[in-house]
Length: 119
Picture (cartoon, rainbow, N blue to C red):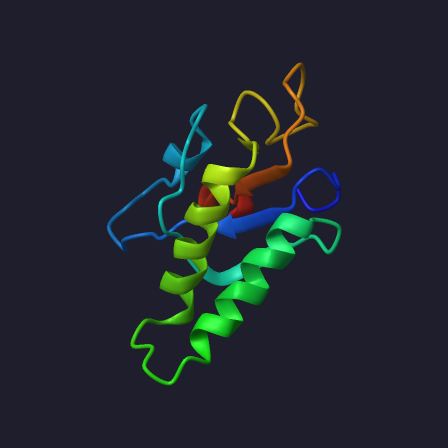
C-alpha cells in the first residue's frame, strides 16, 4: 500500500482479540470512525493530513484536555472529512493494485487488513 504512493493515510483498524478478520474495513465506502493510531503511514504531500496532525497536536497541548491523541486525531479527521473529498480503498478497488476509475479525491485512505498483512 505504501509503495503504491497513492494513499495519504494508511492505518490499522481497532481490532478485538476475538475477531478473526478485519476486512470489514475493505468494504466499498467504508468510513473508519475511530481507528488505531499506533501504526500508520502518513504521506507528507497531503496538506489536509498535515492540518489534521497539526490540529491534533495543538489540542493535545491544551492544559484542560482529557482525551488521548487517538481520539483527538479521529475527531479532527471527521471535521476535515466534512470539508474535503476523500476516498477509502476497498478489497476490489485499490488494496492489491492501484484504484481504477474513480473520481479524484483530496485525501486517500486505506486500512491494513491483518490477515493479508500477516501472510
